[in-house]
Image 1 (cartoon, rainbow, N blue to C red):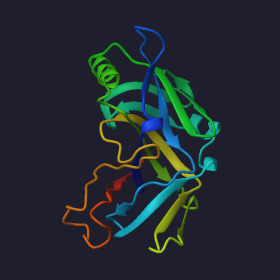
Image 2: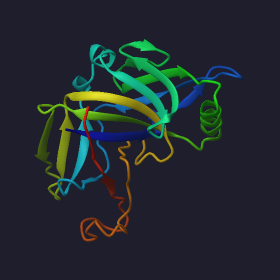
Image 3: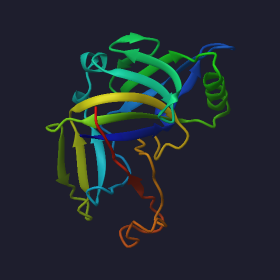
Image 4: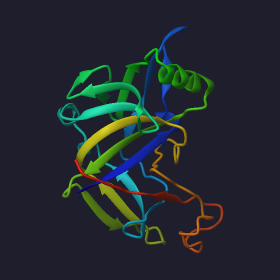
Length: 209
């Protein structure tokens, strides 16, 4: 049984339609490197942390060993493109910023609706679903006066989809999950952060592969 996690990114990583009028080419970043998330809360382990993904966590060979679907909101029924072990309609590349994706939006109901929402600015987040390797995560306390726990990912176990999402949890380096909320969530102690700070809640799916 592996822990399946989701992260989402907005702003600079957001999906965009590129090319001239009538273009259906969409590009964005599914993963960004060396940038800290907002505060996350792991409900399974009952702890708060910020997360950082190192560039060495991803390689071209690793991505080509995965079957990666390009979905909308992580819904397999809203499939937009796919890279199956390095081949298919979903293209990706790695640069200093992160993992960049590109694909031609299909002329399907899901594709047309998603393309229109991107053009309108209603969809502006990118995301990916992953497991981390057992030896690919380390934790340390930051010297920030709060004792914040930093979770650094240096190796993924697998990547299962990239997605265009409705609600990126934070921008430029946004981290998200299946669900997130604010300090009003009754499961989160309200004394942890001030009212001006937004707290993200992370759910981890239990799923076997």
